[in-house]
Length: 370
Ligand SMILES: *[C@@H]1O[C@H](CO)[C@@H](O)[C@H](O)[C@H]1NC(C)=O
Ligand SMILES: *[C@@H]1O[C@H](CO)[C@@H](O)[C@H](O)[C@H]1NC(C)=O
Image 1: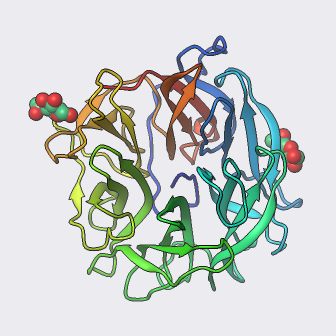
Image 2 (image 1 turned 90 degrees about the vertical axis):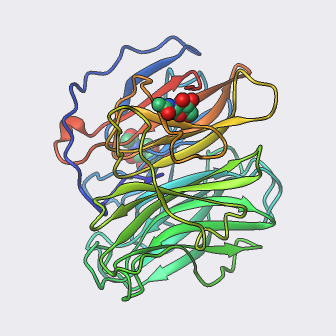
Image 3 (image 1 turned 135 degrees about the horizontal axis):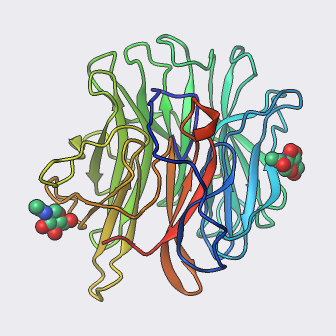
């Protein structure tokens, strides 16, 4: 998921108590559960907020990844632009991910926004690309950059189909890394891998991040956070198959070396422990109440409204559940954003599939949970 939303590795049924939107928030106030559009989401940083999601209007015209923008802390949103397929004539169909370049890279200035997403035909047959687009004008217009990776399809979760899902971008050590879910290896129903590029034009062969020995296991939906105080990286993912999409995580000193790190199931340290399932997301932020540089890891999943907060060591016994009042979603993206010079946790909820009544885009801005 991720950043994404989707044609899913797994379908959850949710009983959400309500889908009534909160009233429109005042600009730059905290709020939760404010519905801004139907259906599904992913997010981006800065004082101006930009979000995207996969969307299923009737075709033609081909589907695109809408870009909505807010310049008042999430209070009002406008349909700002769209990432449209400029090369395949298939549409931009699934699981968009946005990433702002923190430094000049690949011929693009710092602040340029990269968008990766899955392009495949409406029939889901004939091939699939994870494609990369860029905006050099703060999300107003988008230009094709390169094909990151190709599969023969069909783009379904059926075993044996060469499908690709759920790109997640991150710059590391002079390389742009694209993490994704890879169905192309017949030895594994699905595995998690990454490819790298130094110029955004050519991409390496895939390198494994999470691969289970049992063929039917399906690790999926990589997201990663940098734990700055320890200069280590945490990766969360769902483990579908026998583990019923239980959220797992790995910690490594390099985001390119998760494969050899042990997989740990994320379970809350409540008296009645919560085992979150599906569509995890993870972020890190400096602790708002400390000055020693230590921070908090915040994880989210589709099956729980609470978030899971841990100290920088990511101790398996340290996942504290915190209710921030935000609906769960398939899927729920998180970003640490700075609004009027204060760090906040920004949620972007996609739909929960199934009943259209539960399939809206909602967002929320809350204090850093702790
Ligand atoms: C948003 O605007 C784009 C053009 O940039 C258009 O293609 C799209 O249909 C609009 N989407 C919605 C949901 O209004
Ligand atoms: C749960 O983890 C938090 C750290 O995130 C810790 O402060 C708290 O004491 C733990 N609770 C239990 C019951 O172990």
